[in-house]
Amino acid sequence: MSTEEPRTESTPQRSEASPEAVAAAKRFGAPMIVRGILGVVFGIVTVFWPRDATNPAQLRLPTDVVDHLAIAYLILFALVLVFEAVRAPLTMRTAIYGQAVITVPAIVFLFLADQPAELRAALSIWALLHGALEFWSYRQLRSQPMASDFLIAAGVHVLLGVILIFGDGMEALSILGFTGAATLIVGVIFIIGGYSRLSKARQLARRTDRSDLADNSEQADRPEQIDTPAEAAAPTPAADDSEAADTPVAPAGPSSDPTEIDPSDDETPDETATKNEP
Image 1: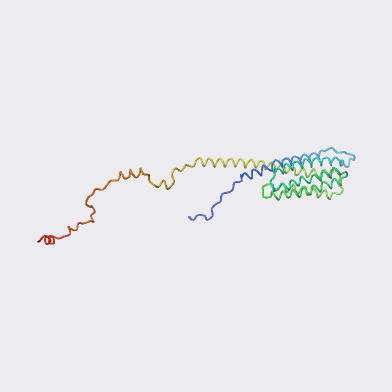
Image 2: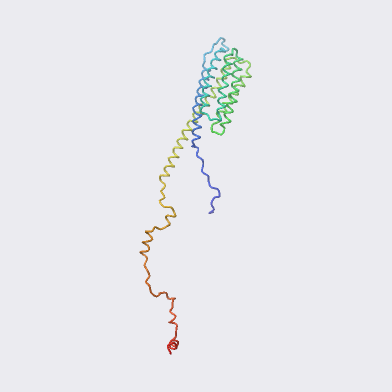
């Protein structure tokens, strides 16, 4: 078995439960739900609004009724966009405020519209401009998860504008039907997207709390360091004194080392006698 260590160390994965992710999810959740509810309500009203059956083969709806319904929807829609722009980051506020601003000329043209062709022109121009600005919002948010909701909304509004532009023979009823269907589709998508963002924000918040609790518990279980390595290696003065007291002292005297031999022992008897003669 190889004992070589891996050359690359595994980098820890970044936690998704960051305060920025939680704030971004909360920021877009509520406005999207409000926009979705408004679109669904307008779509249902356009489907179940009472119509005058002047001809059994063709249901008709007066143009002024469609004007009033569209004007009411655009006014409420502009207010919701302002609410969304206040909560949105600075990079997106221009696009969202632009969506609210383009509702003003559309409302003015709807007040002046007396014929289905004028009604169709006002709603088609508004739908195309709104789709373009919605696509701009998507480009600002494409790095975030679930940003495709804005792309779908942009595509639906652009498709509505194209249908109204080329619908030469449309009456007020047909114009209202296509507009209501588009708002209903976008409303359902925005309700689902807003709820998903809020639930994601709650999950990230709980995950952040759990990670904080785990970090605090690890710090609490970690033992405290009393002495540093240098201090632990150095003996204390009291220990030096006790060791000195317990160490036996060797008695003074001739060395007991056998290797140390007295040179006088190496002399012979004759040499000793010669030294003693006068």
